[in-house]
Length: 485
Image (cartoon, rainbow, N blue to C red; front, side, top):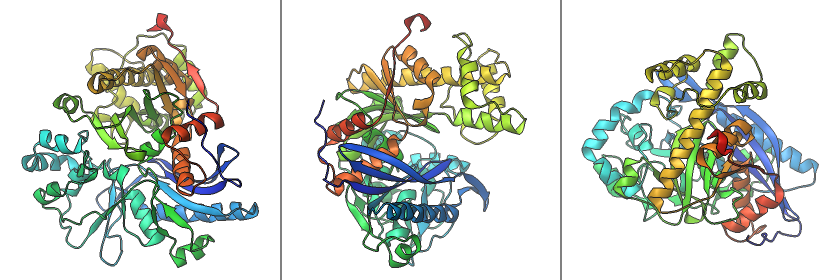
């Protein structure tokens, strides 16, 4: 195991803006005494809304919550005689806002859950062969990838596309940049060169400077605009530092791995399942298996498949609550765990499950197609989801090992799913590998650690940052129960 990172005598205080597809938080992270601790100072909901003919993000409301969270962070820090060193921002990937020359957002950003990009896939592939696309970008095909969304825009003249975390950073600092880990999810990024694939922009008829220049995790984006600083109660000298702005990049940076070869599952609304590599895998076999090569912190490659996740369960809970069934999650999972193995499964990656709707009915319908029958009981539906996810994780990890020529013996589950003991145990059973669960707040930890390193409060590479996580947070282990496999 690597040596623990050195820390500054007084430690540091950092604000992490961490926003997912269903909720967001502003978190204070403190690095003191060889540990990193988090304090959530502001929580807020997030979600898509029907607006202007599509599913969009209410970005104005979202940014107002970011400002409220930074104000809360400033208040908490001041109450403890602390100074916030910097701010880092991470969110989901692929979505963007269009900004004009005056810096105005032209419309509320579309959500990847809107179906508009489906019709753009064929026209894009007519200009750029999918095999050629993959050989350059290494990006998994998803119909909502940024390049397909951009192909639906009627006119991009004079506009720039800012990915969601970059849009937030722009409104805080006035500086337009694109952070590299998120850029790698657009389908317009060269996986080997680590630069924009400008030839693809031209072939698709997109403006050459559609995206701002790239910035790497740990680099400074800018300082707070004077009016923003006054609004939130922070000094105008407070810096915004680029982190792994794709939330999965930050989460993987905080995976508490103690060996080089490991698999990870960033488990939340989506499941990001894969390996950390030094170079992309751009083979035709990799493309056919629909694996993606996305940038990680320190130039690593997140070789993964974007799978369905706990969105299926949260949408089921929403539907059940509307029907008057309000059993809490621990009781629901306990009831599901009591059911025998070998029940029906679905493909959690099926686009059929992407849009919000009556998810229990959708899952039942998908099971029926397989010739099986799923009882309407919430425990049975929940067990079907858990079994389906675990089986999908096992397939994906086996494929990743085969395609990358690597072998792993441990699977790290981070994010919200690490609290789901049933899912972690079923994953150990399905993979036949040891599963280490935690930390829950891996994304925020990765965000804070990159900021802390940029400020000189911690030092070293990813192994050193991960050593600090191991020493700071309790982890749970699950071993395969072979009799159940």
